[in-house]
Length: 231
Image 1 (cartoon, rainbow, N blue to C red):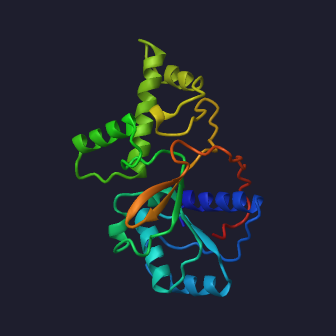
Image 2 (image 1 turned 180 degrees about the vertical axis):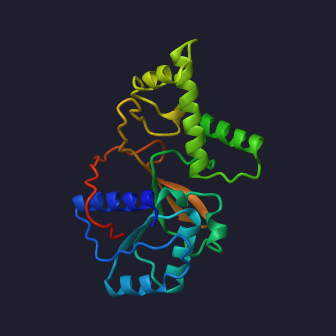
């Protein structure tokens, strides 16, 4: 029930409905909830064939574990990218509740499955700065933001001011964080449409589509901001 998650869920629903998905059940829940038995029963009663969940990694793990305990494992289980986290399996009490779920992300597999120099550099510095810090999507966003700031400062020149750096960023229309993300139009503040898809299988994250890089066949759907999310 956080604002960011609420907007994310509503936007996902609008995008899915634009290509034919039908949403028949949804609920907004508290961040501390642990029991989703009623949700599983109601979704089974509605013959739900898939679900989307917007939560942090521990919440996603609790939800998936509860669904598995109720024997509700629909063909499509699609959590938010926060599920791609080194702590997911521990939080879920093992891999069994998670196997088969699909995660879509606009970035490479930064836990190390994608073997590119920038991922190695990211993991190297995560270990150097704080070996106890969990590698997750928030660490990745922090790294990406820092790299973008440094690059903009370099391009600005010797007289670095806030206004000059922001102006420089407005001219950056093709930024991929040294291969860690799709190409982003920073200057125009345009989100991308490319994604990489991975599957949880055997207690591991495995890239399934495409074999490398990103799939860029999507269409951006503007968020209308109306209605209550039902995902």
